[in-house]
Structures are given as structure tokens and as C-alpha cells.
Image (cartoon, helix red, strand yellow):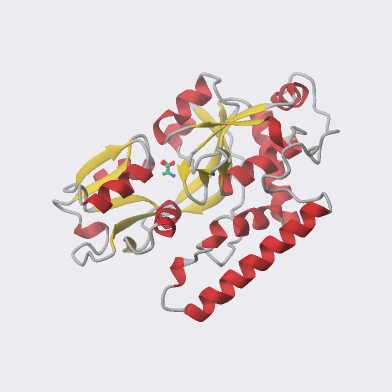
Length: 306
Ligand code: GLU
């Protein structure tokens, strides 16, 4: 187990690892009692709200009656949605998904995760290829024109990652003439055009590819949400570092079909319940907590009217 962000504080690193170990053990204990809400071992377990009933005609009733759901998430983002060796995605977005699908009474092994990259999230929702998207998906007005969002369930911020030995890039203001990698269809790729108009933007379809390009020296920096970059550093702590702090707010929402207010309200209610009973905090600690030992206060959900 690695907790590379505690560099220079080995005592805290060990304490963090021990704490995380204790948390994992506690989780195993709960699983043995049949009441845990995470892990791979729970595939066939009945979901907690299997007896839930929903008003006829709602998306909740349709999904509950079908007993299955298709969810778009990232497959290449450590800490949020990363395929494990058995081919299942793991991370905070996956745990948030389980909280929602449990409330719908859908068994864990009937949650079909499909990969959504940054650029195809809105089309996948619009075309009905997924029932919802939980994929480090920033809520913004442009996207709200074509999809709706429950949440936010987390607020990230855009930052910059460079090679660990880089000394000339110190943040967004030193990117002029530099090759900066981001991902098509993402908010950081849009935003960097305004924030650093003289940067030379290189776009891929996933951040892991940007990390490879940075490692190969094809680009000078990678920009996206801080926690996504922390996930890349976690995988390669000797190669990369963050510079310059954060300079945007990226509230992560759950994307659903536009106009499905009842489903949005249901997800918001479910998130609020998970905020108050500790499931949200556990999901965070088990995933992002690996690099961010302080569990934040969850953001208030935004029950906007469109
Ligand atoms: N949160 C940002 C977005 O939704 C960046 C992360 C991503 O591309 O998934 O565009």
C-alpha cells in the first residue's frame, strides 16, 4: 500500500497506512456480518433496499423492476474509476454508484459499468446508452442544457502536473509556449485555453495517456482536476508532482437524462442519506482517502430548477 503524498513525513505515512489498514480490516469485519457496502465479494448479495417500491412510471420503478442498470464511469482513473485485475472498475465514483444502486434495490452483480470518456458522457446519456454517468463529471451550465445532474457529491479543482524534476513550470502562469496535455470534452481542456492562452494544448481521450506523454517528454505538463492528477501521481510517485495549487471549482455530479426530475430528486435524497449515515465518508476514505487523509465535509446537493 502506498501513500506517496506524505513525502517527507514518514511517521504520518506509516500512521496513515496503519489507519487505512485498520479501516480495511473494519470493512472486512462488516462484510463478514453481511452489512458492508463495498468490495468485490458482495456481487451476489441482496442490495439493502431490495424491497423498495417506487411510483409506477418513474425511472426508479423501471430500473428496480428490471433489476439491472447501466452506468457510465471512467476505466482509467485511479481513485475514481479504474479497472482492477478482474476487469471491474474501482474507486470513489464506483462507490457512489453502489450507494445509488443499492437504494434502487438493484443487486451489485447487476450493475453494468460501461466506460465513458470525458467527451462521450453527454451523448451516452442522451442516447440512453447509460442510465446515469458517475465519472468525475463537472456540473456546469453548458452541460445542463443537454443533461441533468444530481449532486454535487464532491468538489475538485483544476491543477497542473509536471515531471518531478521540472523547475520552470510553477503553475498556470508559466505555461506560455509549453505543451500542455488534457482531455477532449473536459472542462480543464476548455478552461486552460482562457487561463493560459499561449500554452500549446495537446488533447487525448484519457488522462492516463497524458501521463504517458509527460513521462516520455512529449508534453511539458498535464492539466485536469487535482484529485485525478493525484491518482496519476499515486501510480507513479517518482515521476510527477503537482504545482501551483487549484484554480477552478469542479463540482462532481451524477449525469442523468435531461428533465428526469423525479430521478434527480431520488439521487439527491440518496446522497443526503449517505452524507448523514456515514456511507459517503466511508466511500471517500476507502478510495480518495488513500491520497487525501482528511475526509472533507460533503458539499450540499444542488436541487436546481431549470
Ligand atoms: N471534471 C472535469 C470534467 O468533467 C475533468 C475530469 C474529466 O474529464 O472527467 O470535464
